[in-house]
Image (cartoon, rainbow, N blue to C red):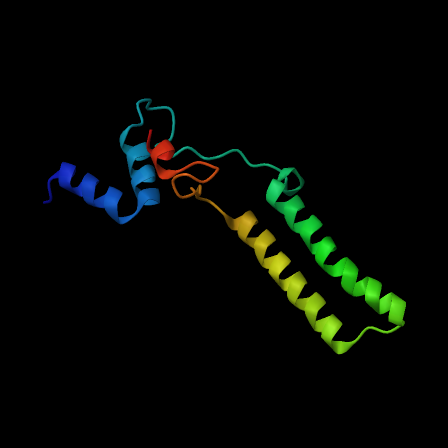
Length: 119
């Protein structure tokens, strides 16, 4: 069996997210609380990601529709562009709904980095 300290170090190097979850499981002190904390759910309408997608999608589609109204026809190219925008937006919202792990940003950029998640 591998030495726990070596395993801990290897795990931290291999995958920071797995390391955070493993560390959380190992440091749970109360027998009444679960080893991994379950984040509280929030409405999709309370999600900044959702509203960012909505506003970005509207901003991307509005000029296409504006030109279509001005020309009084919706071209195939415009329709394809709208479909691509809606597919990307749908994938983003689906990813947000399914997300279960926190993310971090590289050192020096805004947002949490891996060091702040380990403490």
